[in-house]
Length: 213
Length: 405
Image (cartoon, rainbow over all chains, first blue to last red; front, side, top):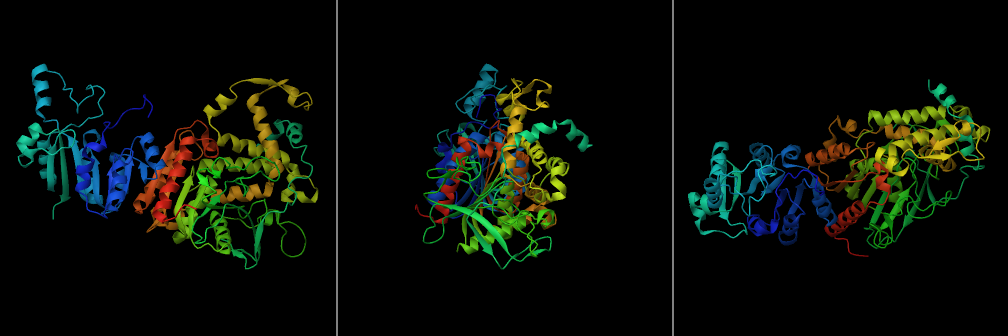
């Protein structure tokens, strides 16, 4: 909360992709939201879909806020805390706009699909045309609405593109059940059936994964 | 070695502190219930009959579904939310329990019992030893465990006609009881709030307790625990035990903030020992005050019994070292809370419990609150902590289908 605390994750606005993520989650399911912030998504899932939704959050101020609101949120972190959950504990494990900020994204994805039947992952797309253009034209690290922190203080230590993410899923043997690209406000975009276009024009990618077999 | 150190402590100074308690620990009438079917203790000894002293606040609803059990810490008692009968000070958790407070007595029926082995009305070392001698148990009182304390509380809850507690809450040793409640009676606890606690007592904490116990043993007035024979109490030993323990309840920052290195004149009427230096640090004065007020309300043998119970506590040891097994299949909703400057029950201990609960698939909330007040923070004015407690209970009430009273 205080200004001198190191910022680990992007300040994310859950409202943008809240509806999109919620629409991918079946009613009554068990959900773990990693990096849940003040718990808006888990509250929404409990209130509207009767889900058993829980959260993990690294920012203690957000945790306090969520708990004081009556939500089951624990202080913890994607890199260290997922290993403590049993296999198949959840139907969905959600990681919203946080993958790019974790220490070991591959390990985190692996854990998500160990403890959950499905992983719902969203991340800002570093392949967006404006990012590419800024780097090409100015020769400096891009600064956009999404990538809005200078390189030396960004918590986003592992940026990736939508195409990168497809490749990682293939390497790891994860099945992409569904995916879409959206603009920063969470609006679906028409090029979602064409990964190359999505990688150029989508500001964020949203994926639902499951283990193969 | 400890004898020499104690001799170095001005003998009279501590005695002076305890001077105004002429009739310590008189047998006040506490609300209580006697269980004549007795209790089988973990050590194998059976108490044929025992008393549980308790207080309640608020009203039990018709469905008997709004009961909240508060478990007190080492030197606490059942007077949670009302003036203490001996010290006349406000209840030890007045900030948390009461009308409109986080544990709202307008909504919940709050119960708090003096622990087995205690000295505020429940059976303990000061209680008469069976056999007709009329003597107290003293050090013959059997060793008590946290599990025994919880078993006695369970008898009280049954007696009150409550089949499921809406919540069990407690800090420090109270938190140990909360954990034991869930482990012993998993279906009886809807929500659990173990605060500033641990699943076992650490070697460092046992070490501090041992210093306190040795201070009591070293006091000649202790008389091998038979101090009732002379009418004196081992006030110096018990006060030193309290002083030592009290340091562990605070933090370096809190001591610096409250006292720093400030000096004050030694009291005029003090013994020569105090005026040895002609002046004293404020922190010394504070600790002596803590020691002297403590001996007015606490029994030395009870202190020995209860510190030992805490030392024995190791919930994982009961499950072959796997703490998660203590909670396997639990439906209880948990709130774990710790404080940044608490070095007696540091956040890492709460995190260990939270992770064990994760392994058991439990529903866990876990918050570490920023505070410079050390372990004592859970008893003090911590608005964020209080907001979280209230919110957690509100959320649980929603899930329990508990209507507003």
